[in-house]
Amino acid sequence: MDATQRSTVPLQQPSRRRLMLLTLPLVLAVVLYVAGVAVYVAPASPAQIRLLPVANRLIVPYFTQIWTLFAPTPPESQRLAYVEARYVASGSARVRTTPPLLVSEPMVDYARSRRWAPSKLMAAALYFEEVLNPTPQQMAKLARSHASPALKRKVLDAYRREYGPIQQQLTRYLSAEARAELPSGVRIVAVRGEFVSVPMTGFSERYASHPPARRASIIYDSHWRSYIAGVAS
Amino acid sequence: MNAALAVLEPRLLALMGGRRRLIGLSLMRILLGVAALEFYLSDYTSRQFLWGPNSYATWSSFVRTMPTGQYSLYEASHSAWWFELVFHASVLVAIAFTICGGRVLTTLHAFLLWSIYLRNPGILEGGDNLARIVLLFMILCTTDAYFSPFARRRRERLAVSDARFSFPNALHNTATILIVFQIATVYFVAGIWKVAGKSWLNGSAMYYISRINEFHFSGPLSWLMRNAFATTAVCYVTIVIEVGFPFLIASRRAYLRKLEVLLIEGMHFGIIFGMGLVPFGLIMLGADFSCLRDDDYRSLAPYARRAGEWIRRVGGAEPSPVLARE
Image (cartoon, rainbow over all chains, first blue to last red; front, side):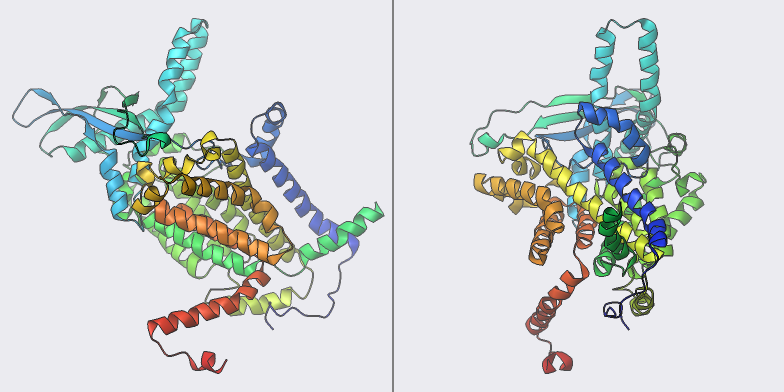
């Protein structure tokens, strides 16, 4: 007999006690999960903030979730990643600097060329900008604040602990990109990454024959960092 | 108290009765498996750069910053051979999971997929979040009752277990409820956040999304989204089908459930074709399949048969004798 052809013979019911014993823990699990998720994903409010520590205990780390999906406001500017490198050519002692090399666009083109299996490399390039972008502003705010030096030091330490690994990843990423761009004979000394934002043509200007020029702005500058050799290419 | 129990009892009995949504869960298994394979293989030649021991995402900081209570198989060793072994085993398990399903393969697949997601979170695109959660619940579900080489045998066994109230049935049905709740949450929250966004309400959001470099995979889509009516319509329809999802899926009217899933599947096809978010789209398509009941799929079977006949006719093949007799 197939499971789809359900028997019409009434099933033998379990005793009420057995039924409660077996199903109530499951019902309780569902109720807890539903309540936990509801609090976790709710917009911040005085009530949500009070309940969040309890919800975190249920949801983090296995059921962590963010579902904004292009909301509330989708990006209205393009993000571009540039890499610069300082290098010494073979047979020379002079340190030269490359012009800023646009690395995000070739990756986007590469992803588009394989539309059924787009590469994730472009996400790697732009992830750093997403994570590190607010930090210069936070640092400037901290420098301007009237907090005691001890407190400022504490905040800086916390910052280093949190962002240290990502900063290290960024240096390795820039090193790998610079290595891929330069001939194998040259010795790379230092690398620098710049993440730039270029506003898109606004919706109201989409048919304008001469839309106003858009100014690119640097949203994150890694500054010069020592090159790290041996990153997989 | 007794009155409350009297209301509760039939529902609890239903929980322990026959397993539900077996067709949807089987379809979801296939699509989640294909999405995982796409994730593993789309950057096969760059795997060392993205996840290897000498990746730009350093192995030492990956181990050091591992969230409490989580474990990735990639942290067991820094050696290249271990990475290759785990990576290729993950691909093989994903293939087996897609084809066969079953609890053991689901558990293995979930563990291996979590492992690689944890190895480099910087390249994830959002669908992974749902896949992680849903795979945990799928471990408790029967996902191989259809579209698997062992499906017939599985259904024969289920016919026996469905003939009594049992705890495994309750476990399957509870996990299924949680999966559907989780998917409804995704859409409802995404829809509500959109309602809070100015550009979604003034209808320009889709214009901007279709122009983001990383997601600009279709010229016709961004051309169409220049039109004020088209972009506003797409924005509003997106909000309506997302916010309405939990209510329509829970509806007693089958046509509303089917219409909602059809609309949301259409949206995800659009995301795959127009924005190039293939693994994300596949995961969401798979998740949507679990929101229809088995009876909904059975009612769609004649349409699928007719579509199959039409494809065969267009392809010039002779109709099969069985279909011809029908």
